[in-house]
Amino acid sequence: MSGLDKRTWFVLVLLAGLAVLPLIATATGNEFQIGQFRRILIFAIAAVSLDLILGYGGMVSLGHAAFFGVGAYVVAILNWHADREVPLFGMMLGTQNVLATWTAAVVVSAGLAFLIGLVSLRTTGIFFIMITLAFAQMVYFFFVSLRAYGGDDGLRFPGDTVVLGVIDTENDTAFYYLVLGVLCATLYLCRRLVNSRFGMVVQGCRENERRMRALGYPTYLYKLAAFTLAGGIAGLAGALFAAHESYISPSIMHWTRSGDLIVMVVLGGMGTLIGPVAGAVAFLFLEKTLPDYTEHWMIVFGPILLLVVLFARRGIFGWFLPPEERDRHGH
Amino acid sequence: MATDALLSVKGLVKKFGGLTATDGVDLDVAEGEIHAIIGPNGAGKTTLIAQLAGELAPNAGTIAFAGRDVTAMPVYDRARRGIARSYQITQVFKGFTALDNVAMAVQAQAGHSFRFWRPARDDRELREPARAILARVGLDARADVPAAALAHGEQRQLEIAMALATQPRLLLLDEPMAGMGKEESERMTRLLAKLKGEETILLIEHDMDVVFALADRITVLVYGRAIATGTPDAIRANADVRAAYLGDGDA
Ligand SMILES: Nc1ncnc2c1ncn2[C@@H]1O[C@H](COP(=O)(O)OP(=O)(O)O)[C@@H](O)[C@H]1O
Ligand SMILES: [Mg+2]
Image (cartoon, rainbow over all chains, first blue to last red; front, side, top):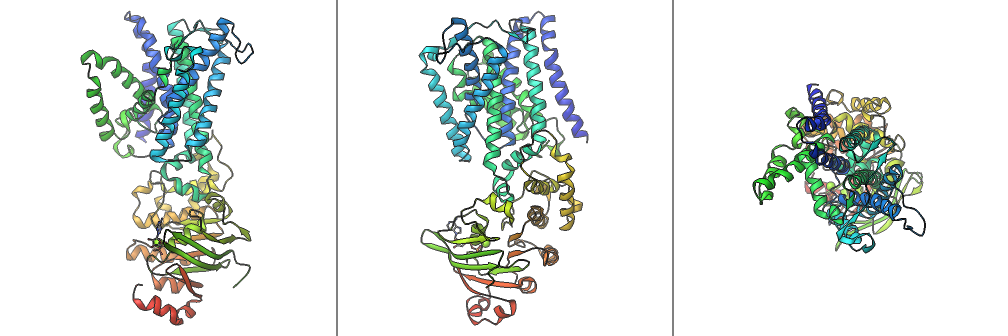
């Protein structure tokens, strides 16, 4: 049972560390970095959502950034229309109400994930990887070609947003804690989810889908539900990202961004939820600092990743587990 | 042949390119019986099971189960209606404990699984029946061991436990003793003997002693064709069978 303790410790220390980060930054005169930290948390939410389908469901989706990007674009476009007072679909649909725009982001991303999943989940293995990649690239090029919203130059929109009448996203620290709150809520809800009956079915599909069908599970439906849910959460992360940047361009949904998310999940530990948070922190930190030492930083980063995958099957999180639990599923 | 058979197969044909793996098979399995299928390697036994379970679609013929045509029904639907199977090559959830494996099978019959909140591992509705079934196959002491760490024979027992946990009306067992040592085989034989009379079983097995001891009825499959069906005594006495199969020392 000491493994459980260690796991809890890992979660607590990591989240506590993230909670005091702005305080440390402020105390040391590094307030300007709080925005950077917030960006990391936003990607952490997206990575956790990918872990649901990748780590628990065994679905290697190479298109997850599309849902993130679409969520961001929904917020950006609604804001832009409200600001310019330009009708959308012939109606004054634009809004800067955060509750409305973020909800819309989740619904649209989840809807897109449902449609893409409907087709993609008919396949498995390498075909699934390729078809999710293809769909994501279609979405990417769709936004590149949308001249009205800036095409590949992207879209800038006013970012003065107040959430629930209290949290001003212009306030770096307040917004940071809002994002941290969303991350913690996501972690908790996903934790409940993966341990529920639904979560067991999703994990069963990863372990042995053929066996699941022979037991009587229409696996396609359950995988589709998980895929849709993960898309919705990624859309929420995208909405936060849009509010964070006040600017959005198709580059955030390029397929390499989907690859980055996979790396965060694998680096941190697949099928652990908290691992991908650590993975996002480590990945984005290395991505930021390694180029300071060498412009060929990918040459350093590649082998680091390889070592993690080869020697720590549960990624960073795995280092904190007792050896006999590193390969076990379902915690 | 009994017309009130639980499973009734008519004119089943399955072709793999030029090879006819199932060649016009008729088969009736009566409720409550152990019906064995014997035949040399490559006779098409596994292919037949796969069609009955719904993993392979036949080229021709019909499969009726409990009075209903299930020929076009997907695997999971047949499973929910009561067709359970084990595999010649063990198919368990290796990363899960033995108890988790069986609980997953119990859950399959406990309504839909779009339940997102309560922890399934604390759910007595799933865990208690699962424990009872592990005890039934003699694996209760191994409940918390990951399936991957179970001995080969134990994994095979676990597969039977999973099939039983779905509360099936028909068990399709594809060589449950494949790859087992002597002691493991004996344990499995005792388990099958225990199930006799409680479950309807379509059993594929190479060990003739086991087949002739347990089966109520035997069908002999050679090159995809069912060349004979009858009681163990009738099969033993059948000249065609002796010539085609029993005589060639393959058993
Ligand atoms: N998926 C497949 N594709 C092509 N040929 C197959 C396939 N599955 C089985 N076969 C062939 O069909 C025949 C019957 O195989 P099988 O049903 O596994 O026999 P058994 O279980 O009686 O040993 C064999 O000749 C085998 O090579
Ligand atoms: Mg076989």
